[in-house]
Image (cartoon, rainbow over all chains, first blue to last red; front, side, top):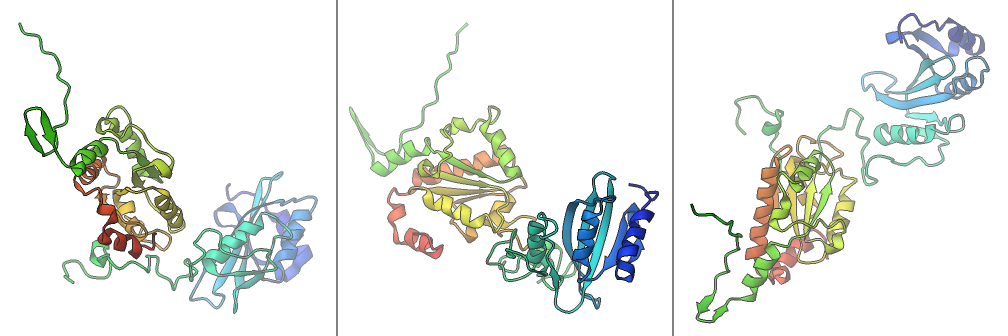
Length: 175
Length: 184
């Protein structure tokens, strides 16, 4: 996909319908990216899916992002694909306060597992999801491991010397 | 010119008392010798160490030379659990169940850095060594180890099978070990 992809029609159709609620169009690496809020995202997905001309009928992915230093600490990112036009759009929703957002399973059935994964790793709650529980990590896990406050390393280990893993102490320093 | 005929290599007799017309040894020794050359391994291969094991089994390195011709893909008939590869925490209970299904006497070999210690995967999702959930007899280092190293680890298992008491598995130490892992 190049920077020359013409999204003007998509942007104007969304603008007619949603006005200022869908904003900040960008085209990083040639892919249209729009920002919206948690109340608009589901009607927006529905509109893009059902619009007879655009037909964004395929939900490629839902994922989360954690920005601990921003006011909107969490972001949910949706990728949708119009198969007949081979057009992709990325939709970003910033979440301030409680990380909660309505579920998209009533628009795209495929959202079910994607939202479970996003919940599993970021603790973002998809309200109205039929079965919001962990999908990839062990059920006993008590943390949301992709949040930045949790270390990447296994926190149960007791027999590893940090120096052997190049962390925790300076070169040449002994325990 | 003399022709040389290949002599089959015969395993030496175990230590015992020998005289004209008789040979006496203990059951431990005789049974240990037999068991040592008839181990049925159960390969539990999850990643690249499993590929090395495939080479170990195949004709070039030929694990069958050591009496381990017959792989057991059911834990019920297996003697040796060979864990080869990264064990994710979610795989942990599965591995433990496979171990529990094996009949005594049973041995475990951890092949490669991941099975032994988590290896490079020092991360929230990976078990930091299978000895956190099941007892391990022999560790083979390497990432992945070469087939020669896996064979060497296998021979260390053979030493154990040969030399340990056939009643070791009834000993209080062994029972305490299993108890510490919560295995009955």
